[in-house]
Amino acid sequence: MKDGEKSGGKAGGKPRAQPAVKRSRIQTRNRKRILDAALEVFSAHGFRGATLDQIAAEAGLSKPNILYYFDGKEAIHVTLLNQLMETWLDPLEQMNPEGEPLEEILAYVRRKLDMAQAYPRESRLFANEILQGAPRMGPHLEKRLKPLVDEKAALIAGWAAAGRIAPVDPRHLIFSIWATTQHYADFE
Amino acid sequence: MKDGEKSGGKAGGKPRAQPAVKRSRIQTRNRKRILDAALEVFSAHGFRGATLDQIAAEAGLSKPNILYYFDGKEAIHVTLLNQLMETWLDPLEQMNPEGEPLEEILAYVRRKLDMAQAYPRESRLFANEILQGAPRMGPHLEKRLKPLVDEKAALIAGWAAAGRIAPVDPRHLIFSIWATTQHYADFE
DNA sequence: TCGCTTTTTTACCAATTGGTAAAGTGACGA
DNA sequence: TCGTCACTTTACCAATTGGTAAAAAAGCGA
Image (tube, each protein chain N blue to C red):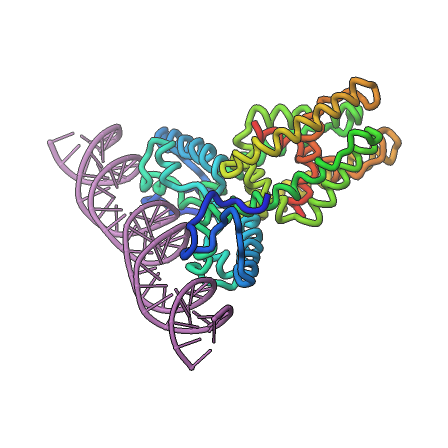
């Protein structure tokens, strides 16, 4: 998982993603600048509240220049979301089926909390997207998040069934951990 | 707490709030329609994502007609927030200092959860506002929310000090209750 | 029914916003 | 040194959006 674009021209035109995504030094640098700026602006104002002008100003580039690197406002947002999805899911992913149940769960909470404090903008970005019903995250939600949650929920359910932890609804547990840690990020 | 406007013309002009807010049947009905529509639209799209046209359509009124009743988009939003603030704070307010500590806290959680499920739009409205840093709620936050939280936090701290409940940071407790219940509303 | 007030509509704006076309600039290999 | 291609800027647009002015249409008390 790295980009988020659907396709692209073949050669002459714009430098969009492609099976073999060769990127010049300038492209790498400017795409990074744009995504950094977009994270700042989107997380502060939400998708609709953010403007390309703000992102451009924050990135130190002109608006048309930004549209040279991305297909549009939505493409920037989608790219950002997809790129951060892995980081976002990582704490849950790391939960180890072989570990000591309670310890694993607490470690997960700790990782989530650390992340929410270390990356409040990323947290807000996701919170905002979820509040709007995740209109630009649908495919990825289904493909990555849901299977992962299913898997870990089954794991926790197994622990509970084996009497190794108190019986809880695993989904509710995961869910309230999200909610709490995310809100700590929201308030900084 | 009822309105949210700052002042208003004296007689002939528009029907804004005033020391003595006499409202005709039509005014009462249409203001209600507008605020209902605004709750729907603002909670779904956030402040900047919502448009007056959407609110007007939802309310079944024309845009200029809406601006006859409210000073502008922001005034509608502020009025809505202030009007719902009491409802919003009510569950916490009801926490009884004389009651059995654990029971009171659990009852509070239950009330919050009930409310989040019964009024998901209101919950989302607040969540959205908080995510943006509560730019249109500042004064009320300070004046109502903060004192109330201070009061109840002190209460919980007292219970903990007296050994009647396990020692916890009261603010964190209140906070995580908010977070969790609110997120249940976000996902419906 | 008349005359006055309240409410609603019609017809507009100016500003903002996402986006484009095309000309210009610069780096770099032949 | 020249041509080519990658990158940037300038100059625009069309659509949307919050908001206004003023005319038209209800309401309504006397």
